[in-house]
Amino acid sequence: MDHDETGCQAHPEGPILCINNCGFFGSPATMNMCSKCHKDMMLKQEQAKLAASSIDSIVNGSSSNNGKEPAIASTVDVQVDAKEPKIISVQSSFSFGSEGSGEAKPKEGPNRCSTCKKRVGLTGFNCRCGHLFCATHRYSDKHDCPFDYRTAARDAIAKANPVVKAEKLDKI
Image 1 (cartoon, rainbow, N blue to C red):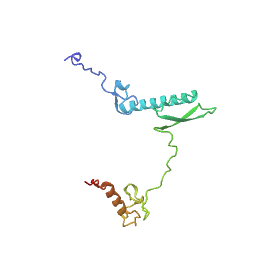
Image 2: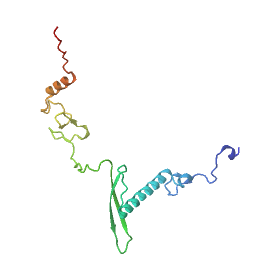
Image 3: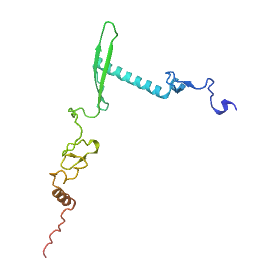
């Protein structure tokens, strides 16, 4: 059969190794690189474009945020030595949503049981009183819970079952 009839093309040189010598096979569609090396190269190009645009916007003092795009806050540190070329480091922080949140939540310590101070991690139980407990102290009678379950249940029943009262009849 002829290759022109089937639409297939034969590679006379066989499989091509990645040009980065990572050991995988490359293809002409990915510039003779394997898919991982090609993806890494594309990511580096995107980061370089982002850094260049943020540096350009800092130098020009223009801001092109319409509120729909993420806000970019950047700081540029330039160090110049007589022996070495310029070193530019760019630190970016992205903030999505409203910029008015302001306060950052301080890092909390490990989760511990409120009664025995045992570390509970992800397996802790939150009680209705607002404290965190281990598996031993998770029940209300084991940690002297101040939450009033009786009143909460009464309020829930009263809210779910409103009083139905018929209208008074007019006298004849």
